[in-house]
Length: 119
Image 1 (tube, helix red, strand yellow):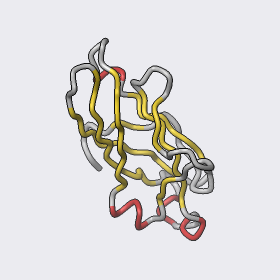
Image 2 (cartoon, rainbow, N blue to C red; image 1 turned 120 degrees about the vertical axis):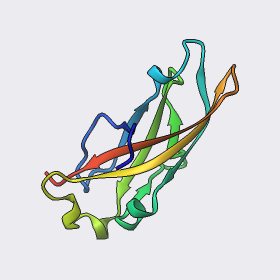
Image 3 (tube, rainbow, N blue to C red; image 1 turned 180 degrees about the horizontal axis):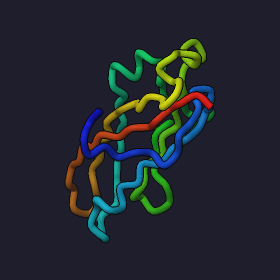
């Protein structure tokens, strides 16, 4: 597992279709807001069926109203939902988020994780 991982606040079941927040408020200056976020899922997690899901034509990655939190819609592919990796303590699915801030124009890359486990 990556150190200094930003973790999502929820622990979804592999069968859940849900969004989660990556709260970056404490990592930004008061006047800084996020622009242009992109999220990449790791090869291990995509191998376990983790994928992005947009709602209708919506982008699966967006910003909340404060522009300090990134909202990601994701799910586990139905063919992978019964994988034993999700049993007991579950498994942390990891990814990376890249974004630029305004008005400073600084570029960030942060690792994040979402713990999926069977209920």
